[in-house]
Image 1: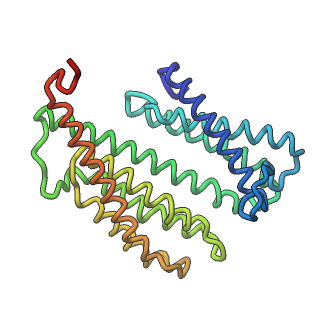
Image 2: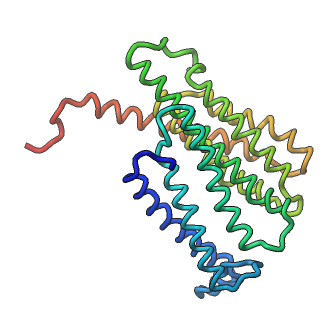
Image 3: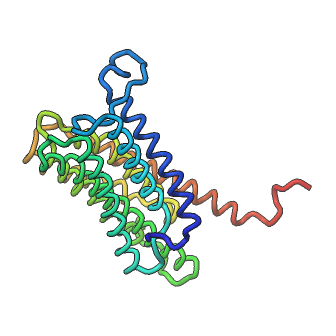
Amino acid sequence: MFIDDKKRALSRILIGGGLGVLVCLLLGWLSQPGALFGGSLTWDFTFCYNSNVPEALGAALGILLWFLFGAEAGVATLPFADEGGAVVLRSLAHFGVMAATMWGWVMLNFTYEPLPGLVLTFLLPFTLVYILVWLGRWVGWYAEVGEIRSRLGLAPGPSFLKWRETLPHMAYAMVLCLAVPLALRAADAVDGPLLSIFYAGVLLPVGAFITGSSLGKRRGFCPLYPLMCGVGILMFIPMARLFSNMDDRAMVPTAFVSALLGNLLGVARRRRRDRMAARPAGEGRGV
């Protein structure tokens, strides 16, 4: 449905589904009270947290849903189509299928919880992460096209501080460092800001690092991208005061350093690739 290359898609489905089952088992073990953090290393599992279905049925359905979710994530590692319109339509369909799968697991496990709270806790973060991943891939494709044009001599020379080359990633930085944390903070619980903690500890550093690395690999050292990530967090901090009094200042160096390290890693990968490409054929091989 999503991928034209069915053979490659099947392998990604099996790998992703297997990883999804492993995550399900790990989640069931870690979430069991006393199974790990209480000091006991017993293999106790919780598959249905407050569901009204029997435990055995809940376990089977939970494993199935995690397999499907992992398989759908595995398929997303392949390009959906070659044309822009088809990419958008298949991406929307893929998002709908993944959201439905995740929502099935939520309904299985949290039957008695208020519906608005479940949407804010599960569906909103998933949607934001999906948008970030999709935008990250889009700016990566855009950078690849720009690199190809530069190698063919069809593009102007590098701009000052590579601002033109960095421009699509600057828009991504504003989404990652301003729009996403603001939406999560608005939806977060005041007494237990789990969404904000997840963003500051995982989503922000990983997102900034990966996109910085992609930019460095394709366009070289671009100092404006780490600066823009830091600026985005600086803009977020006063707006976040409308919803909570959390101290968010530590996220400024987190965003800047993560993006900078990612960019430097991408530059190193780019230089290594260029050296390999410039090496004469047969060099380094045994006689």
